[in-house]
Image (tube, rainbow, N blue to C red; front, side, top):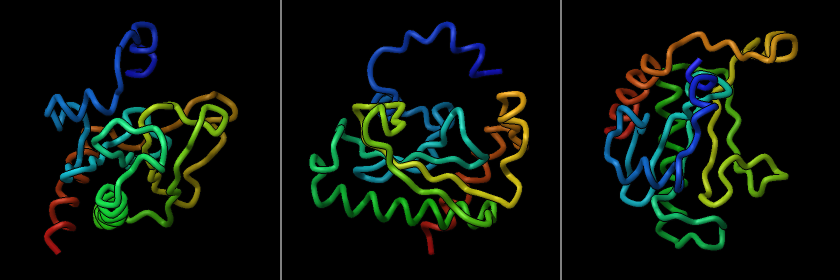
Length: 157
């Protein structure tokens, strides 16, 4: 319902990642981890519970725009994200990917980001096909609390 209610008044200007990074309201913006150069967000309209997005803090559209420190931290935070998801949710597998360009499915074209989607046996069923609805078994706030705790624990190892 949050998606449906907000879809009519989507007049947000600017980049959804940059605005969330600069606001520093992590719980409200579903930011589960901040690195020095990279931030990990929960997707507000996820494909599955625990769907994360990992994005550089700088507003960049292309892989070639990343510097070596950003590349290294992106990789480290993608690995930390997998460790936190494993700790908090125990998925059977993951989809980890990057969509570059509108034709490739990128919803945000001008700020590069990776998706990490936890997967479980049977997590895709008839609902998306028949009712064009995805069933989410856990509320975003509950998932946020579990993941935030898991990131702290995984980072301390």
